[in-house]
Image (cartoon, rainbow, N blue to C red):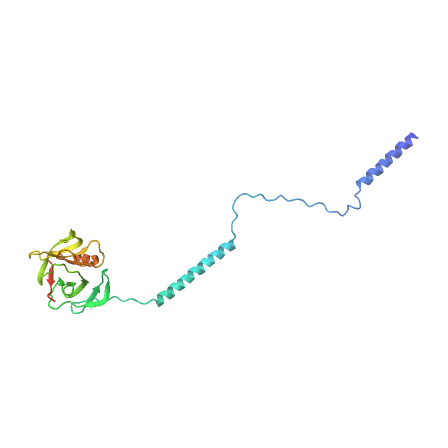
Length: 233
């Protein structure tokens, strides 16, 4: 009896194990769970911009440069041309120098009977000086005569100095003196503290003053021995 029970028990256990090893009907078609892929780790390096964005920026830059070139060409085509003014001569009137040394369209003719050759022509009545090279007027400028008038006649430049103190106490620049042999020495110069045409002097002086740029031009034009012609008209 006990032997029979042992056999039956073993047979039942075998059937149970066989049943448990067979797949269940409810899970026969269930797919295996998807495997999880490892997320890429951030290396910390900056991401590179795409080639498409770089190409777009390059094209926009080229288009902008082309537009600027077109506008510049149009501006050049419409800009008025500037012609150089002709050189003044003794037969023609020369351009007037303004208070700041710049020229204007107003003209002043060289006085008649004002000598020949390289010379400085000074007209007290017109308050004007001409720098003449041969038969060509190189420059003309307005001046402020001193309180001591120079007599008409021919003189020579006796000395030059870049700076001095006038007889009226004014500090002057680009001094060109003439008529040293007469009772009074005269001089062309400019007020150190005034860039344009200076005001009339208040003290006694034989200085003939002008704008600094004009005085500098006269200073460079002249040399010791240059003729100075003071006209009577």
